[in-house]
Image (cartoon, rainbow, N blue to C red):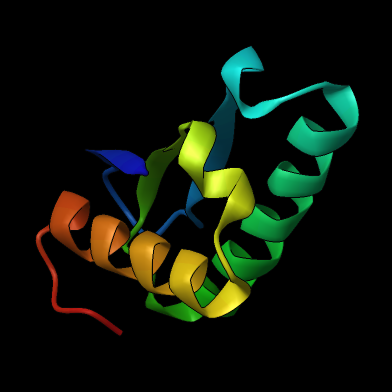
Length: 86
């Protein structure tokens, strides 16, 4: 799991894109993982710093539990933006 962040000037809402490669599985598995990631990022919404985020998921992300995946995303987003974990 990786999160890349680029700061934005001003108080624009954060923009988030997702990179889920074919090594995660077929299109159904990739889309399911993308939906799970969107739900997790929606929980983070108010805690995200303004800017652009790219959430990248590797093959092991598709088999992780929701709580484990949420912890990974939260930690990676906090590390990427230089803030503490929400």
